[in-house]
Amino acid sequence: NGLLTAVSNVTSVMVTPYALTYPTFYLVGAASYIPTPASAPGWDAAAAQILYKKDNKSIIYTYMKPANFRFLGQQAWGPTNYSIDAPGTDAASRYFKQTSTNIIFGDNENMKFTDPEGIYMLEIDADGTKQSLKATPSPLGYKYDNLYLVGSMNGWSDTNAMPMTKVSEGVFEITTAVATDAEFKFLGQKSWDGALEWGHILKDNNGNSGFLGPKGDNSNIVYKGAGGNKITVNLKAGTYTIQ
Image (cartoon, rainbow, N blue to C red; front, side, top):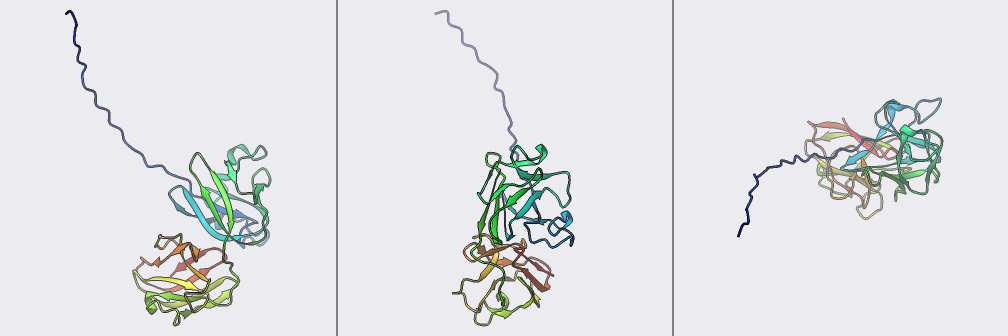
């Protein structure tokens, strides 16, 4: 019938997926708990507080007060700074497209936190479609008289929880053997029924990142080191260390 049939060559296309990488954020500024330098507390880039990062989210439960702050991309003033995306902000530092109502423009480099002082959950969503920052009050503060260690080292017995020594407001420590794979949490009372409880940051998230989460948003701390004997907790910073 005069029709021609054409057959084309088969072409293969190989697609290589790449994992998205998200920024690491360091908190710095007068709004933070950072005590240094003495002449301008909070503005010590070398002491800037890193946030816990999981996928596109960066989170920390930490002290904030009404004052200016920003985030750095490193523990130094350059090259990367992150602030609110507003006309008055230096162009290179414009990042956060959305912020909670208690975070506003501060100056050409900084944002300003406006809520009363206390412990807040800072949450950054670095997804390119969001680039958001919000500060939500934590259910727990940091000014407590007592803190106790409870976990595999004492059979998870709340009534026999191990007392920690208060070093300063919000800072406690204890010297005890911490074996590899030891699991534990911290209590503000010798009972699981009380409100004062801290563990590894976020629910269903056992680990040993050094970040704390309050009751309702924590998991077990699981120590993976070679053995330690001193645990220090800083409820104001939202962190712990094992040495």
